[in-house]
Image 1 (cartoon, helix red, strand yellow):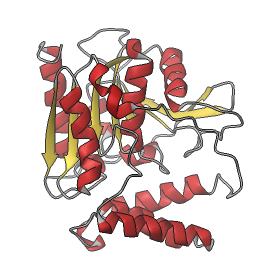
Image 2 (image 1 turned 120 degrees about the vertical axis):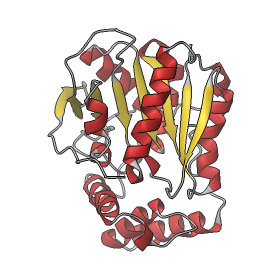
Image 3 (image 1 turned 60 degrees about the horizontal axis):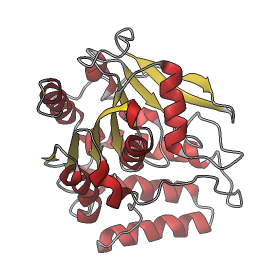
Length: 290
């Protein structure tokens, strides 16, 4: 399948009250709260930014308003100067943009943010699409490959080897069953670049102001919206299990597995991912996901 043309637009800025939050806002003109054409909100993995979605944005924006923010402390968004919750930042942005109930689409940390927002701000969420996360437990690694790769990242940071950290961080896209040469070079480059861009915003001794929403796994049964889990078949099993758990807990949910893809499945297989999302949205609009 031909890879979509990447989107290279510049983000807008939202004055959050604690610095500006960057976000991409593209696609057809806003349609208010029309449930047939909900806004799609793309939520990136940790340490990266909205640019990881560059190949997913164009095909989705052909029909939908697409919003892709940089989480606070990531990409072009301001660092925090006081305690904050990512879900509250996202809620403030969506209120500012007047999206109405939106479809939140998240990968890894972005999947956790999507679930937290659906639980804490349910009026803003119409449906969820999750990949490689959703329970806030992505640091609980068990696969030896994943444990070793995380340890290598920490070791590189401890010695100030930022390029070494970026290399091992990007290898999170590879998974336990492949070699880096099996993953698209442009994806690994985007992960490294975005990771270094975010890492450069921080210092080792700065306080961590982020307040996670606790109990996402246990609270997933309280979701009231349809959920689609889209996992890579080559991701570490414990990471893929998080999105699947949320889909299994929701009132209407299902899981799609993309072959030949790892933890960054939406970015590695953007065409197949968009097809899965569009089919899910048609089902939800037709009433199956209500």
